[in-house]
Amino acid sequence: MGVSGSKSKGFWPFSGSGSGDDAAKDGNEQSLTRARSFPGATPFVFTRRSSMYFDEDGDLAHEFYEEMIVTKNGRKRAKLKRIQKNLTPQGIIKLDHPCIHVDFPIILCEA
Image: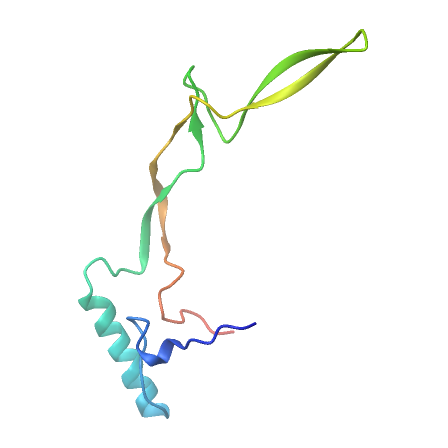
């Protein structure tokens, strides 16, 4: 049921190797060196993909609905129908404050 892989077997580009205190320090330094040597391997995230869409009128929202009048057994009811056609994704947006990437292998604070 669990994951059978290990980060220390070389599958992950930032993993360190060795055991013991001195080896752990060397591994952390090595992982920092590897992180710096890969292009684009920065701990910060400056942009993200937006989950919002533009409709035909230029309105921006996560979801769009249209109110429909349904007649059933002589009674009129209002029903909401979700609109999924003719929507344009907002795309990549810039973050106000940079965030730290989830996969960055350094512990910033230990409780």
